[in-house]
Image (cartoon, rainbow, N blue to C red; front, side, top):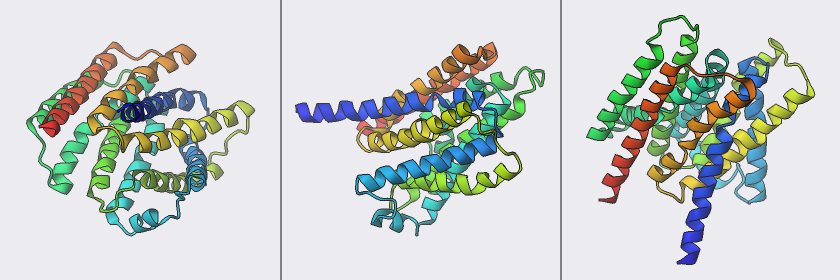
Length: 293
């Protein structure tokens, strides 16, 4: 019994640490004065190399049987491209709008996943999902209610699309017969690097020591180690529990940015974000209760 409880706490801790690492993305994207496509490409290149190294050291190498089998699956590739689009769009959104806007708007992903699951996998949304969707729409209205005065609405829209892609990623992973979440993340990083690295020749990054340090932190810890922790934790705790633990990410993300850069999200964005996060929590709890019964 003690071993089971300890194992569960380790899994919960893995998800929590993953969420904390993810929450630093907005800050480092803000302070790194490079083109967003260059940031996304180099970050994913470093993350892919780190994940390959860890998988190799743990004898679960990226060229292992499960990964090779998954590469033959259409949904696996679709999940890789969807998560790649999630990362690219999120970096762009962080450069075009407030970090709080980017993370809170992306956080509607579970609701989009419910709708996309209905469209692609025939998983009909429950009543709780429809209620959550209405709440998300109300939250989006608050984000866009001030017109174009702030000049950030294009970034807000890109952040919404990032959330839609993140939701699609989870749907395609469920559709795949050879489920390999860690492998799909690795594939997504490779795809992102291939798409984005050529932009280095158009927008050459300045090789400042601080910028290189920030990039290494993002690639190795913020998204590389976080991906490994998430893949470990999500297989050992219920999805609803992981979702609720991960809610620390949208809370901490704007806090880091505020403390370092002084960027303050608009009150309407905070209100809209609070509604979206509440909608996701309600939907997750309803889904978890249904699963238990």
